[in-house]
Length: 492
Ligand SMILES: Nc1ncnc2c1ncn2[C@@H]1O[C@H](COP(=O)(O)OP(=O)(O)OP(=O)(O)O)[C@@H](O)[C@H]1O
Ligand SMILES: [Mg+2]
Ligand SMILES: [Mg+2]
Image (cartoon, rainbow, N blue to C red; front, top):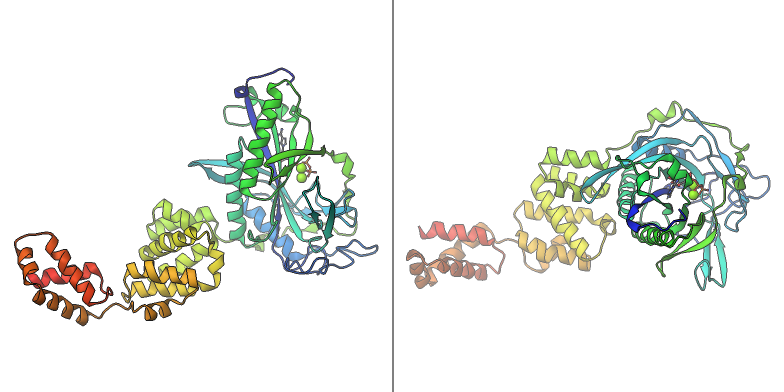
């Protein structure tokens, strides 16, 4: 790579190590709580502090969660898996070793499909292994390379992680972003992950630049080229957007280095979110540095029979297709309604109670639209879906007009936390009864003979004028379409 090359002759190769915090009540090797809201260093015990003589006991729910992810990623789950110690010294790791898995991880050889700009892609999953999270370091007065001092919180030490390692199948930063979004979607569907939790997804991204010729027609990169390329591992990425930015930066940095005839160092770099750059941290440690050896305090784990009993729910892709066939939704609506399990479940409840089309309009367009406009997430109204359902019922049973439901009730519900029935009452939005409307129609005709004459002479504007009169008389609570029909019937 010493020779200067044109930037266009170079291809980017990316592989990810995604650390997923599995949602369990207690830590992976002890009974301490995983509740993130606790005061620092209060959720600890001799096991997760690594005190001499303390022995780990494996948490069954963490294993169950890992098996679910493995199934969702179409990975094979071996009959027996084991734990290893990965030795290194760092203040976030009180034992000086991390219990992790090494040569026979719980998930092997999987795949995840996703779409990027309308194109279907699949990325291979090499493995996914269970491990314990280290504590968290809180750098004070700066970031990792500039902080004055650092605090450590061991509440996180021992929280279960699943490290998902992809094949180096990504060809660009946009693909990585789309993959991560899809992965989160699947993890949330499985109920093993909470994306709103701080640091629940942490990504190490490996990137190298290879000669274009090494990329085969099917997009695969020759093994030789992968091994000979110097890659950097970018740490401290915690969001989809961050991953895309960090990797775009890193791709350009490496291409520029190669263009200028400089070698790319094999090293670990740190993504500095606020500066938008990656900075060199240290040369990449090699496997032998970690002195892996088997964790003698934990017996081998046999999941052979148990794994068949662990069920996973319908996943987003399957649900998306079913929504189209079962409810006749178009693909855009089906996409919107299935990105989170919660919205999809809610949609199905409302569709069953009222009507699939009405439910699609109200959930996909009105509700998600208004939430999006307010930069809100559906999780923020989690406890109030019953109220939204009540609002849809008011429309479905013709008690209020769609216009009032949308422009007044839903907005007040989201802005002031109001209850739908209370808004209808307060604003007098209850639809006028048929009788009232009929009376108003008759009165409007009676009081406006000129408009009636114009109508009979074929003047288009006359009917709108009369509709306006009726709307005024009913205080806007009639449906203009209905009024229009009633007037025409009356004028025949
Ligand atoms: N040439 C390459 N360019 C970019 N990524 C690569 C290349 N070769 C391998 N990778 C990716 O690097 C990652 C290697 O992760 P893995 O956990 O196996 O090893 P590691 O990074 O050496 O170890 P550690 O867990 O200590 O960080 C994988 O995601 C893989 O796809
Ligand atoms: Mg790794
Ligand atoms: Mg790595």
